[in-house]
Length: 407
Image 1 (cartoon, rainbow, N blue to C red):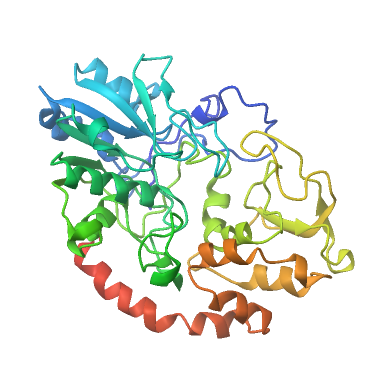
Image 2: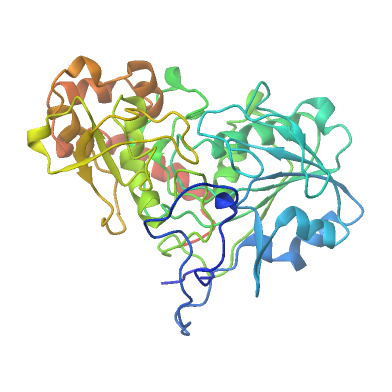
């Protein structure tokens, strides 16, 4: 299957600059693999400079970016902002989503406005008091470029950032260009569908937890379904990927966020991400984020595996900090083709004091519905729970089909 640029292990990840992590596992950069005619490399939109640079010449540009916003080259990669500046594009400012422009903030931690020390450009936070660009912040721009690597999970907040940026652009007559990137979980649609009354920044629309679309496709859906505020439509241009299909197995060469360090964490994230709405630790505070789960209040006799979370890069205050957590190691899990409830059911079943398990409000925001917690508490199996999703999933797939760019 097509796999994007693989670099030598000596290439440092942008997210690890300044990090104190001691690598004990596979990072998201691997040795080169020989290309074959059947494995034409995926070309991300940021590398299609011949397509989008003419759209930016003579324009005042704002960029929504983070450390994944890069242009690949023979030496590794160059950040998109640096690439644009070297091409004499007049970049005026950078908008930073969750985790920040350089990617050092914890999940949920507010990102502050500031100045990028490498370029001198002002950085405007979209994950603090302001999550949507204001009229004043857009008033001096002719166009906004959005380039963020997504992982295809509803509560991963970058699609919410995309929606609010598109709304702001629509309201202020500023065109937006989305540089598309592959979705490593784009080969399936699964999970509970968000209920309208429970929408939040962890899910602004009634879509399944795993929606199987790239950022560019999702942007088209936001416009086409009238999901922007007041049904407005952004002046949208999507720069498409080359050599990508939804079945492409995509290896991310840069962490999309501090706690998704490798392919295994990304394939497990749709299933283990629901632990964020519980008191169970899902690997934060270890070198194996979203590749294990456990808690001190789970039955130690039910598990052979245990670990102790400690503060580290990307997790200053991990759940169960300093406590021995009993649970499961999933670090050898191969690429998944579905979301599963088996692990959260396992954890709940082996929790000694079940009143400690759920953070009800947080779990509902992540699941998108209060029904899922009730189903787990009632003892439904993985298969029984997933059967209740199917009607909604089929309905969403029909809508999704209208906006797919890739096979």
